[in-house]
Length: 130
Image (cartoon, rainbow, N blue to C red):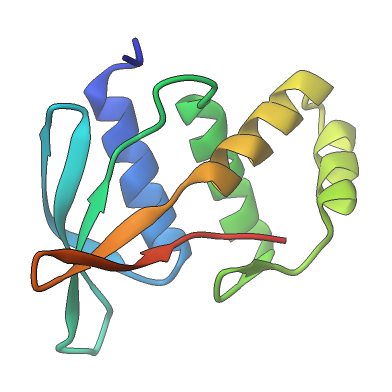
């Protein structure tokens, strides 16, 4: 089990969902699992979701920091990065990130799979990729 505080995973969830253009309407956290409903501005449609943060190798603080950077630089279109991984790594290194922090944050954000739940079953996932 991860030793990170549950609140840091909530922060990852809220940041990630905002990055993909949606908002968390409600959520609950139990047994290391976040679940709830998201929605989109000016749309009535909502989507139930479920996310279990990875047990190991996930850097929630670095992930949130990277999400904030990606959002501020508008480096995502839909679910796809607008730059290559190598380009993002170089840009972050020039901005003062260590190589370890860069790789950890990128690996963490790319590992996120927030499951869409329809009629009680997983139907798809929200994720980002290069």
